[in-house]
Amino acid sequence: MIPGGFGRKTAVALAALGLFSLVFSLLAERGLWPKLPAGALHGTDLVAGFAAGAGLLAYLLFRRPAGPVPAAGDPIRSPHEAPAAAPGPPTSPRPEGLG
Image 1: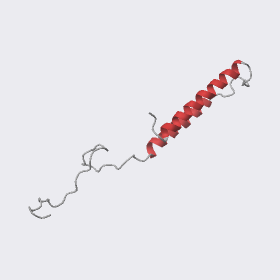
Image 2: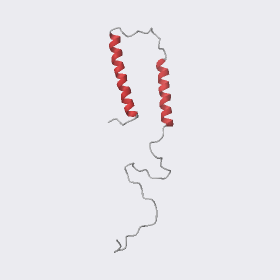
Image 3: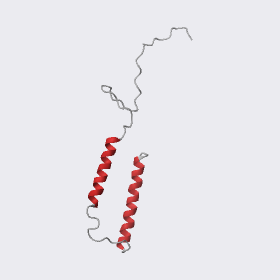
Image 4: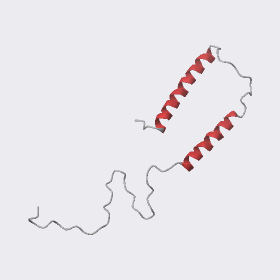
């Protein structure tokens, strides 16, 4: 199961890339795709890789945490766990006979 948001966008991007690859391969095989001269894209992979790496680094450094960050010394709890009861005066049982 793909979660919403980022996962869905990733799945759509991968499907689009696969479709483009298929169309490119079919058109290039039939000679319908323009051929570039040798060395026309020299160094493009380095620039694209650097840009992707810088974007990933920026995303990892500046993303917001998914939930509240526990303070130092707080126990780590599962998000499905019930919250701890707030400290307060002890409760006493109701006296017998009152409603």
